[in-house]
Length: 255
Image 1 (tube, rainbow, N blue to C red):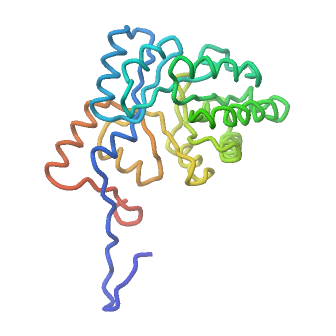
Image 2 (cartoon, rainbow, N blue to C red):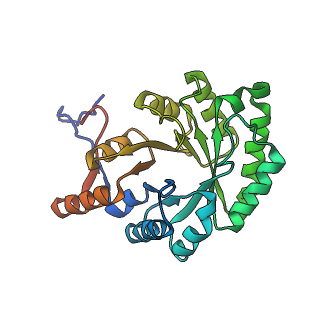
Image 3 (cartoon, rainbow, N blue to C red):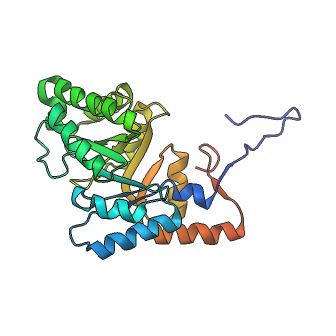
């Protein structure tokens, strides 16, 4: 309900402003397509540095290249443990930790672990919980963040909610709806995830954002990290800032 002033007039809530720099820090750059050359990856890293993006996401084989290109910047270098594994594989704790340490040595600053139906359902999810907990605990002293990547294509709504609860219990820093495999989360699923996560666990929606207005609306819905066409979004934000402050719309007022 909208607040009223002592005079009885409606008080319009003050909208939150966000800068272009803050917007940039909500974007990941996807540099993992099969057809990308080393030059393409280097160019993508240079673009990420230029705009001050949150992170680039690369295949394990390209970690050293990306890390070298991003050296000295604030842009993170993200990959996934078990990138080349079959999604039905259980991701055993010791093997996962061994691979994680190799990835960190190659330059990763953030690691993901994919939660699939096969992993969540195996023995009531106990082995996957053990693996995720061990990964978070081992990476935290190294300053390496862990994100839980959910697979909406294989998980039921109930399992997606359980995965979010697991993310909170194991202190991962971000949960992600969708990956490079299968379909991405839809809006209903990403809202379910937000409602199932504490606010101190960030939420990423992997469905690419194509318009600045959509990006601002998603931020208003509590989504923290995005994919999208970096150049188009950042140029649109730059043009918009020339006209006035960028503002996040308010639920119940603007939509």
